[in-house]
Amino acid sequence: MIDVLENLPETDPLAIPEQRSLIDQILASNKQVRGATMVVLNELQNQFGYISTPMQAYVARQLRVPMSEVNGVVSFYSFFTTTPRGKHTVKYCMGTACYVSGAPGLIEKTKQVIDVSPGETTEDRALTVELCRCIGACSQAPAVVVNKDVYGRVHPNQLPQILNKYRG
Ligand code: FES
Image 1 (cartoon, rainbow, N blue to C red):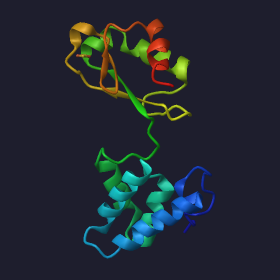
Image 2 (cartoon, protein in one colour):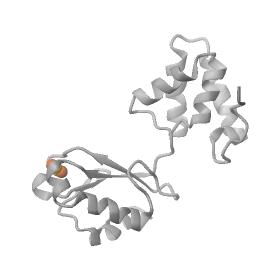
Image 3 (cartoon, rainbow, N blue to C red):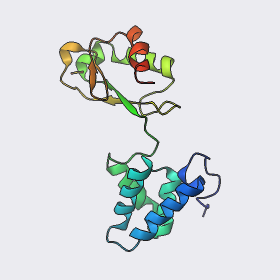
Image 4 (cartoon, rainbow, N blue to C red):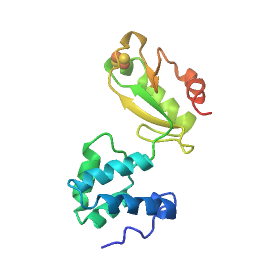
């Protein structure tokens, strides 16, 4: 079996001594509780904001449960994420009205402007880009939501200005 602690990306919490010791503390204090897998994952998500694949493998090994069990829990609940999230979430509505009014063009423009596709986060961890279903603002299509701010009838040329507002 490959050691989960080998060839870790240097940004992985397991590769950072203080963070690794926090992971060990969380594991040690919850090892014996019922439903330990869920409890530990919950704590890790809260503490680190995500649970990387090496972290999942480490949890599986330390709790002596199959990796498929840990991975199954992480993928089932949308609360868990496997990559770090940005400070702000940018959602592109992919409902029919927004789609036909130009949502794909907005996504394309986003890729050009901040170099991320849906599901990804900018390198500075400022923005995470996601797709969403109809948000009930069809008359404003295409709509973009940043955190709780809704932008309607967005033209691709307006995107840099909108996105830069949230990038400090
Ligand atoms: S389809 Fe986008 S708001 Fe309804």
